Amino acid sequence: MKYGLKMIIIPFILSFAASISSCAMKRDVSPEFEYKAIDIGFGEEGYLETEISAGTWQLKIIAIKDHSYETLKYYFYKRASEICSDEPNLKEDIKLMADVCPEGGCFKRAIKGVFSCK
Image (cartoon, rainbow, N blue to C red; front, top):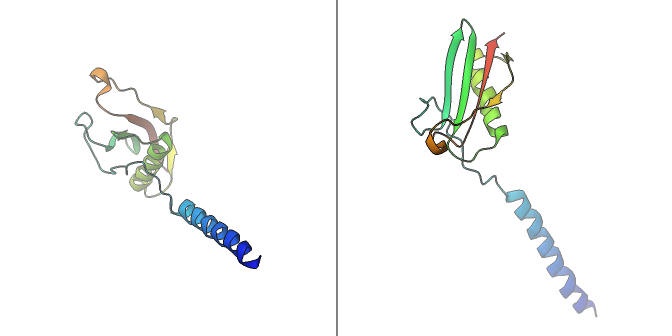
């Protein structure tokens, strides 16, 4: 009887441990964002920044792969913080951009926003 119980409990414990470790090992399968300066319209992924007045910047984050809005927003704040060397002051809400290229061929998703340095 004891042998039969061990044969039930041991596989259960092993499968439970395996399921926990597989959950811990799961990664984000989305492609990594290519964080670099770009020129829009060349099929590249990255950021495009323009100083629109002294200390005020417009920043666009362009994705040609399937990245979430949250991912693009993360890179927006990352680049804005690099430009400002501190936390940027957002001048307007970060907005999704519309792809105006024929058949939507410029990018998969993009955002833009305006900020200034404090």
